[in-house]
Image 1 (spheres, rainbow, N blue to C red):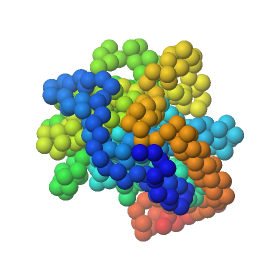
Image 2: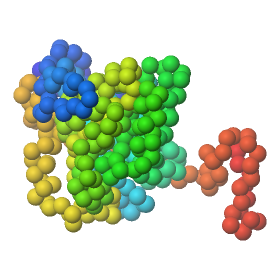
Image 3: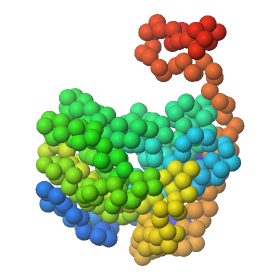
Image 4: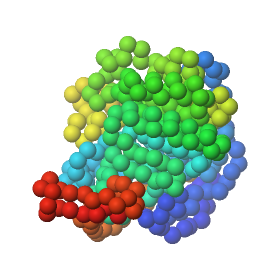
Length: 389
């Protein structure tokens, strides 16, 4: 079934991702069974099956969404170098399979909280390209009203709670969200995401301990891209088997470059967490960019290492091969899709550039509860003064 059979739909760059495609994804739900690239490695649990149920619609959707994420991050790199994005900026290219696979296994009732490499997680939760670029450039239509920037994306209506700049601090917050879910009997779970660099944080173990004591529906997801900033995992962790770090908590090691392995693992983890409490997922993944835009990413690893991962494990290329092998699209149709994606990204950037900066009064909003009656003063205690709304 080629993409030429897909019906057309109008574009909308300011709409959620699912509605932003110029052509609708095929609605063919005929089952396709995909086998994961590698077996799961389990700790204190039986691993899930390597056979994953999918469909034409899902495969094509995976390719398009991941290609959109990749293009968005490459564009953010260019905007940063042009000084249209300022401050910290951490890019996700290479790790797209984690975001898309996780989203395929859960619902918007399930919560996600992550660190500062958050652009693609926001997009996967239903955010729009326009909101992404507006926030990155500090404009008022951004997902955090232009006040959060790259590290503080947020989408409460899709249970996405950020976007956090303090290493590891999002994990206890995620366990708190899981506590609220259990207290409210919501039958939902929370995915608290962190990197291998944050895996040695003490607060992570404290949060995991109380989650296990109270059987909270919390899933700790370690995105192990093998470098905490510029430090290789073997230099920072005596035991780099992060999925075993919970000791008394079950864990699963997953090929984080395989979207279907991630989907299967997250589905398994959700079922486990609702019945038995917390579980750890270690996603074996890789980032192509440096830690942040100030890091060239080539001083602590070789260019051959990076290109080797691109050639052998790239998550988008893996999906592309599946699409072609199942005769769901031709090479030309996929290239046409990538051209459309490039235009969508360019249009979103152009629109975001026209969006105004936040009003100066916004400096005093979203600080305290509304109507709290608090006054804020500047450093001189006289000239800069405002009553907080």
